[in-house]
Length: 380
Image (cartoon, rainbow, N blue to C red; front, side, top):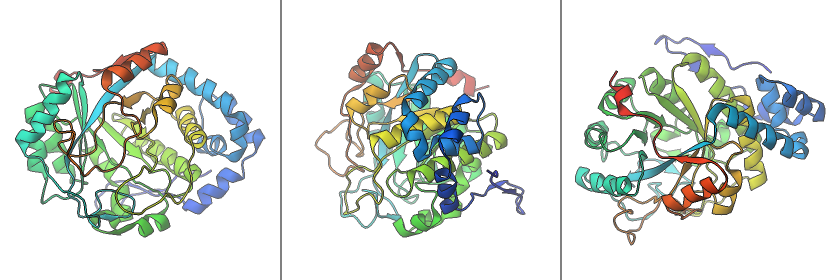
C-alpha cells in the first residue's frame, strides 16, 4: 500500500493527502487470512498490515487481536487508564451537520456560559476529583471565541493538570495563544474521511469544507500543542476504511510532528436532536476490531473510549487497548450545576460518576489515574 502523498504549497506547510476512500475499502477487503496472520506476526506494522487487521478476514481472529492489543498496551502504558470529563461551554453552532444535536437547523435551547458560569462548572468537576478536563463548544466564534477561551484557561489552569479543547478550528497563532494560556491539547475530528459522505452530511457552515478540516490537526501541532486528537464519527461511512484513513493520518502526523502526542477517539453515533439515523451499522464487535487494529498499528497512540458507550462494553474493554476513559459526563452547557437544563448534544450511554468508573477499573486490576501531567512542565 502506498503512503499518502505530501506536497508543499506556497505556505510551505505540509498537506495530508488521503488516497481515494473507496480504494481504501477495496484494499482492505482484498486481504485474506494469510495477510492477517502475517500482520499479527510482525513487531512493527505497515499500512498494509493495518488494512489486513481491519479486514473481514480478521474477524475470525478477533481473540488474537485482543490478546496482542492487550500485551502492547501493557508494554507501552502499564496498567494505567486516565480519567477525564467534558465541560460543555456553548450549544450555539453555525454549522448544519445532519448528525449533530447542536446543528443550527435543530430547534433546541441554546446557551453560552459566561466566564463565571464556566468557572463554576469547572469547580464542580474539580471537587468531584477530575484533574483533566475537555472544554467543548459548538462552532460559533461570534458567541465563543479565542479571547473567551484564553481567559477561561488562565482562570482554570491552576485547578487542573491538563485542559483540552474541542471547539471550532483556529489559526496557528490562536492555538499558540491558547497553549501559552494553559491549554494543553486539541481534539479535532474529521467526522468522516469519505469526502462524498462528508459533503452529504455537512450541508452548510465553515465545517462543510472537507480539506480545511483535514489540515487542522497539523496546524494545532505546529502551534506547539502537547497533544492532538483525531477521530471519525462511526456510523457515517465504511468503518473499516475510516480506520485505515485514521491510521494513515496518524502515521503522517507522526513524521510531521514527532514531539506531539497523538490520540484517537472512537465515537459511535448516539441519539440526538434531529431525525438522523446511522448510515452504517457499527456494532461493538466492529468497534473492538477497529480499536485493536489501531493499537497494533501504532503502539504509542492514546485510545479514548467515552461515555457514548454503555457501561458493560466499557468495563469489558478495560486492559484491551483503551488508555483514556471519560466519566460522569454531561453534554449540555451548565448541566453539572443544574441537572434539569435541556439541550444536550447527544445522549450518554454510561451515566456512572467518577468514583464508580474508577472502581470498575480497579476491579480489573488496573490503575485509574486522575493526573498524568503537571502544568509546571508547560512553563518550561
